[in-house]
Image (cartoon, rainbow, N blue to C red):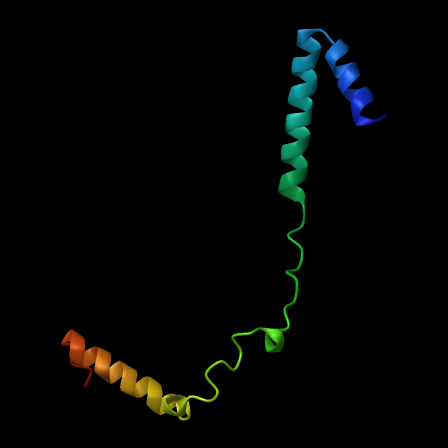
Amino acid sequence: MTNEEMLREFSALPPEGQRIVTEIVSALRQRYVNKQPAGRPESVNLLAEPFIGMWKDREETADSTEWVRNLREQEWENSGIDHR
């Protein structure tokens, strides 16, 4: 049965029949929407993403540990937090 045929059949029903069909469709939609498996997310090739390696030529990040340490110290000094 095509969608058009279904719509014709539905429209031919009396109001009480249309209400019942609507309730059934609503119940079925809730039942099956809630039970659909989540599925696996699509895998992404991170190496192909434009942000990978965008800072590779920046001298200040050559030693990332030192760079982060300096950023934290600057932030702590500016906020008045004693981190020692």
